[in-house]
Length: 185
Image (cartoon, rainbow, N blue to C red; front, side, top):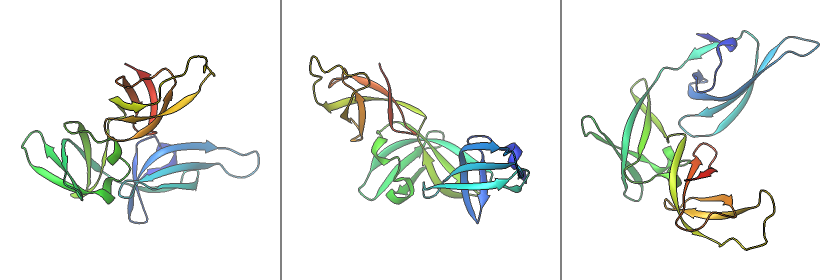
């Protein structure tokens, strides 16, 4: 059992029979009344975000999860195949299980496969990835509005917003959690 005072980002807990990871939390001490903790959870099976408030000191069950780094091999249309690089064992995940990351999967990349109590519950990409821009509009000279963005299609098929100076063929670093541009490499 863990208390709300033990919360930290990435901690996994069990709520209502589901496994959640803490995305964000905030301890609040109002002038009147008891302290409480606003928490944002991510369901590791479905990827859905849940906002929940707890009284300070409230206890809950910590979920123990195992993460195995596996290599993404291919997509056969309905499922995605991953291989354990140590023993070459392969597993498949359905699109529904990893729908939030499928547009950033690139053959050969490492992915963390998450297990809880021996059950396969999902997959997570590394926090940052470098991907090539394959399609974007050219930046127009004189269009230098500070912070202006344009859509760009990456080699995995994902479309993200990038600054105007990024052009086709550039390799960019992105934050996979928010699907945001970080820098050009």
